[in-house]
Image (cartoon, rainbow, N blue to C red; front, side):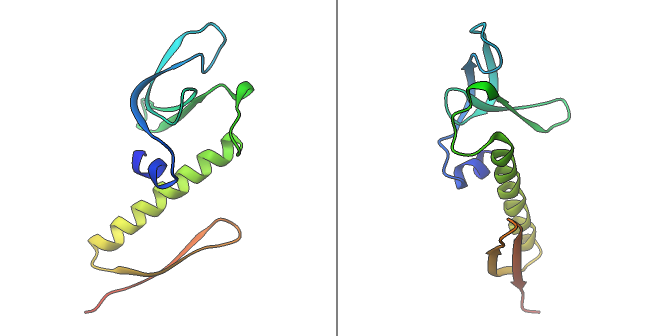
Length: 110
């Protein structure tokens, strides 16, 4: 998660408390990873990261759903690259398609 956010050029902080991200009671909410004072992610009981933010005061250039898609896509890209390397392949080419899918060409010498 952290590496995916960094590759998307976010300033990532770990183990932070966000002030007032969910309601207006000025409560602090602990998050595992934050990308600002009001947006973070916490690991749930299923081992998945959840977005923690106040959607009503969202002021990012992209909607929350698109942020989650971009982070998920970057994480998947990193996972595929790591698996390819572990299997002895190298990435020759990579394209991001108009529909935001990613296409890779990989090769290895045998």
